[in-house]
Each structure stands twice: as structure tokens, then as C-alpha cells.
Amino acid sequence: MIPRLTALSETYVSLDDTPFDARTFTRLWLLALATYGVGDVVTTIALIEYSPTVSEANALIRLSIDHLGLLGLVLLKYLAFGVAIGISLLGAADADRFLYYLPPIVLSLAGAFTTVYNARLMLG
Image (cartoon, rainbow, N blue to C red; front, top):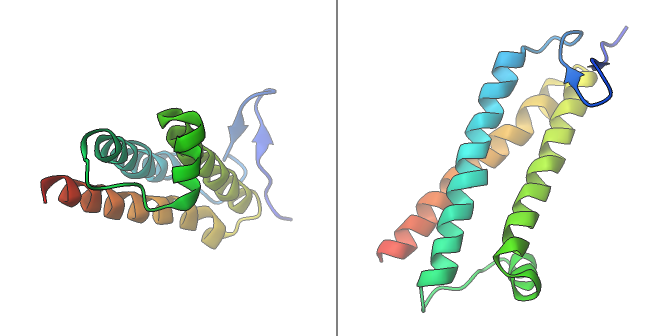
């Protein structure tokens, strides 16, 4: 029998019946939030607002910013974050370690890289 995520109420999900630890899940996603959700977003906004020579390289984000301003950037970043959490939870429900661990690791690495890269662009 494959463990399934159990609903605690209509709005909450538990990892109790899965082989994964809620503390590890929280730590992984806090790291992803810090690097991708905060670091990348803040440094990207700083570059867009204060650098006359640097522009957004991602065409989808650039289009979103053109239509919605900085809110477009934030919405796309957090949409990606939400999709990644969903994939991770599906991995947990199916006891799939790859799908469980990969999304927060990828977002953390991408966020750390882009934060450092953006900071370097701001300084150079």
C-alpha cells in the first residue's frame, strides 16, 4: 500500500502517513523560500529599478513586468514556487524521493545562483 497525504481538515495536508519528515520538508522549503523567493526576487527588483544598464534576461518575466510591473515578477516567481511545492507534495504522497526532494533543491540552487549573480551585476 502506498501512503497517501491525509487531510487534517479542508485546508491542511499532513505528511504523517508518508516516509518523509515534516521538519525536513519545512527546512528544505524555508531554504528555497530564502534563496529563490526572497534573494532572487529582491536582487532582481533592485536591478530592474536601479540599474540603467541591466535588464531582465528572461523573456517571460520581462513580458510580465511590462504588463503588470513588479507585481508580474513576483506573481511568476511565486507561481513557480507553488507548482514546485505541489510537485513535492505529490512526490511525498507517492513515496517518490526524487519528486519530493528535487523541487526545493532545484529552487534553492537556482535562487542562490541568481541571487549571487544579480548581486555581482549590481556591484559591477
